[in-house]
Length: 346
Ligand code: CUA
Image (cartoon, rainbow, N blue to C red):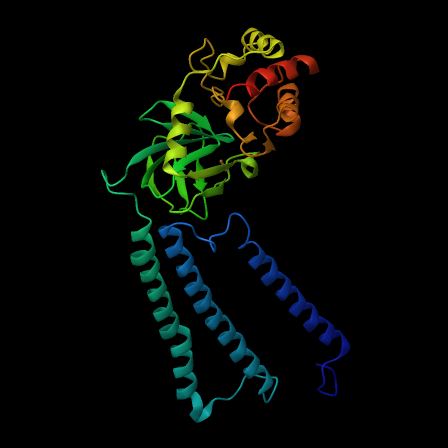
């Protein structure tokens, strides 16, 4: 405050700056709630419950926040002197206000929200009761991709989780290395992937669609590029996909593909990758039995095209630094042949 009791230019500038920063923070915070990974666009019963709870929490937090700021502003505007106030006979009223707004109301708000989240939301997103689901999918976190297994058929894929729409699916999550956390915001809550432990969750959506998921527990250099897609299909389409994914690696034609296959086997790719039904039986990297049928590579980092795949084989560290695939020293032409072979594996 300047001498005359009016705010000086510097003070006004400071107030405007604080207001602008606040609005920017709110806008950027809310922008994170939209998009393809939004809990505010739920597509399952569990995430619907979670988003309702989120809106109630936002409402309660807003009332508390703006109420506190309003009282603070009122106190500032109605101040009488720069020192501490002399309470006198109003001490009882002031104490009652402090007890009501500082203890009683926060206690009621916190207990209510805790009850709502604990009883209401957690009950809805708990692990499914055994025998209540129609099928089981196993997802194994790895640095930095997702192994997806269908135990009933033996199908194995990576980074793409196909499920039939309108079907109760039990998802069993674990990890092969460090702790990860699987989160598909529009379909289910987060589920931690902990070494030596299997966590279960219900994955069920009535809506056909493609949903983006994300690792949500820091797991190393490429944590941010550890994404997956959940593809919910009509049951008929899903059954066809599963039948195809269960079959062994197809025999492929074409001269480039034939040379690519020979290079794949000769350069030791099979030490890390599996082509079911062939001599390539590695289990360190993703199963490539039907790689050509996937839409992305490297955990949704790049599109699955022959050019992108060839560039990845040529120099995997350039595209996703720190990943566990070594540079095998293939030339550009050799990489293209291996890519042509793998892309033919539909
Ligand atoms: Cu896996 Cu973060």
